[in-house]
Length: 102
Image (cartoon, rainbow, N blue to C red):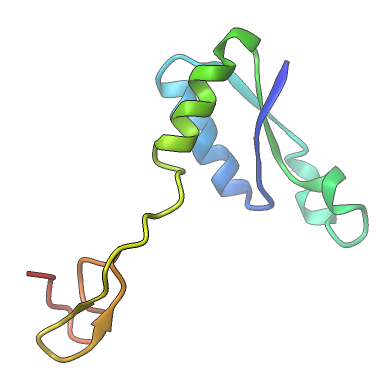
């Protein structure tokens, strides 16, 4: 068994699990119940972890998590909405007026 992903955010771990499970890579979550003990127990012992059932899936799973939906957002150019508000590249809608990026 191989640990493939870990995060203090339980929802993020389950998101990774769902992503891998949907393409046939079987996984399970460890330390799910310990997430609430952070601060009373060492951090590294408490964070939820995603483990592979079959080690032969490791390369494919790592590539998917790195390049797929859990990949860090690309840094892009800022854009300015028609109302004048400056937005970061990952946003397609203005938080101030609700207009969409052109």
